Length: 226
Image (cartoon, rainbow, N blue to C red; front, side):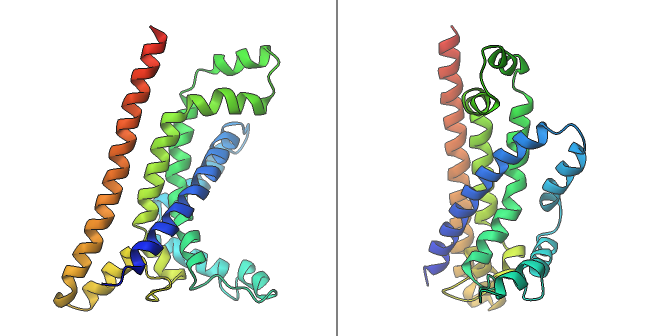
């Protein structure tokens, strides 16, 4: 078996998770500060989570293709992301981002508003309140969102195959390799089973780790309050 899908999938999933964490935290904080249009913006940001991945991939193809607005702009510098590993990172980020955003937003909504108010009375700027009050208070939610985003990026298929394709050794991720192995017939089912088991094991390990971390975090927090 060629191990390139495993390496490529990890690289794409880690990069997509990193982008999702930064964008998700920032988007959640900004949306909660909106006074108007919060529901509309929230719906747009959450949309990739409820749409079929192929629809998301088709939208990205229209956007990033040679005739699309972003693709046409990139072509002026002789650049293209379609059918490249970068396309896989973009696709995985788009589908993983809503999970991070919704999880972090839920954590921020549960924070005691009196903490931020107390920070204001002490003369703290909004940026310092965000760094020293909001982020530490949302640590469990951020951890959970990160794992969910990683697991989603790890198994992404529909949007990835639309804009990154299925090029062995270049853009073929584990989920795409599973599809190719199944399409090749029963003789390749063993290969598909190996990739499927690998994705399941990595996703389960991530969720188990965050559950253990959250339990330790809660115990330490309870110990400090006693």
